[in-house]
Length: 261
Image 1: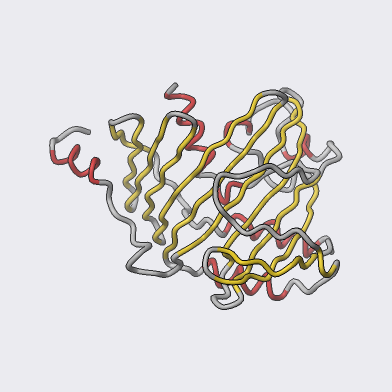
Image 2: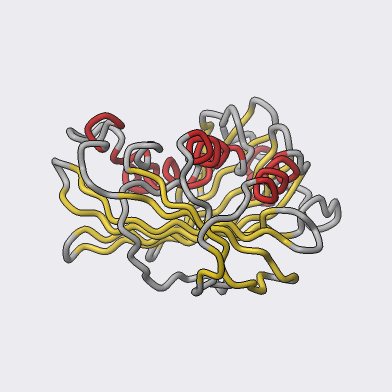
């Protein structure tokens, strides 16, 4: 059970929770979010999205919520991640899957993971910027002259957003951590399968930040089979020092005060 929980946490900490594979396949998610459904222009400029990504990467703190759904045949896995990030190296993250919860806390080069009721030392994450994982996608798409679609204007959290969609080939991004070592899961091997990944970016019309990112995919891993995967990540309270400041968990403070490592 602990191994399974560490697997989920490793996946949750992957930059941006990127999906791989893909012919768009929509499933329900466990977080209320805006969903754009209509393409209003098939070819638009990349400049507004690049500008929003540039601004988002400079955010000093934010909260994020991510819902992940993965289906392999009759097997279905879903989990939700709630996190608070404070650049450059502070984070508090909770992962909820089925009947158990796990947590991760990092301050500088010190990190702890809670599995059950006990906190244990953990490996700190070198880069906590959840936005940076998407730059490779945007730069790849621009370099290969992939079309950027504009979708219908959509309300997310607390503002209207301009919505952009791009579909990139399979193998551009890595598989989640728990499948990265599987036979047939390398970027080169994934690229041999005829599939794609759809990314949908929601850019706040008032704030200028990327407020939501959705991925939709159906991929094939030789040793696992067909994987249907959808993620939705929402960013909120961006650069709000009152609401997005990372707080050390009370249970961790109590454990350290008792001298338990």
